[in-house]
Picture 1 (spheres, rainbow, N blue to C red):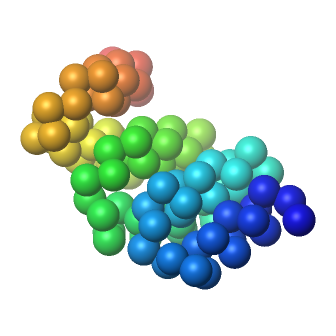
Picture 2 (cartoon, helix red, strand yellow; picture 1 turned 45 degrees about the vertical axis):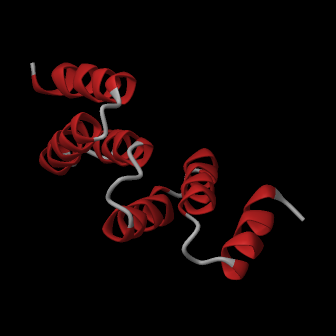
Length: 103
């Protein structure tokens, strides 16, 4: 059983597990399946808007796929959520990526 299959099995057992869903999305990124990774990350953030790390990965994915305006939106939302959570590390990573894209 490969990593994707294992993570899918874990997600079936606990479909609300944001960590597992995030990890599965990143495995799809590694496999080059950006469409499935995007679906999983967007679904995760709709359900759990405070899963801060997913904002960065979703925005980077969108940026790679020439969806600049959507990437900007997700970076901005992620920065707001990181500030609310007092997560300075995540905020700084999101801000740096955002500034690289915008400026």
